[in-house]
Length: 122
Image (cartoon, rainbow, N blue to C red; front, top):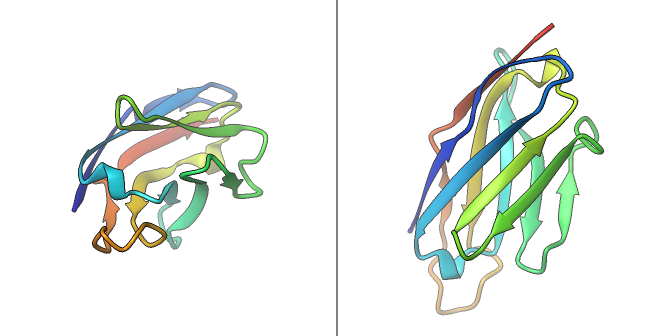
């Protein structure tokens, strides 16, 4: 299994910036896809950004051009740089990692962090 610990959430004003971090431990060699999701009050959890092992990225339309997903493999850390924040970005943000596209020597897993609160004031 892989364990994920998130940090970096907090309160920020509109048009401000924030960077979230996700530290992974365990069988990190078996991670195939990483991503960030968020859940606002009264809404379903939604995809924000994903990144596969080859570095290909995918973003939700609502954050494209404002958010950037990156990772530092030497530190086993995934990042989400959030710029030009809007009040509608307010949500609990979750880090995710899975092994579904990994080789046969890797067991299947789908791990989630504990979540970190991001609040954007108007």
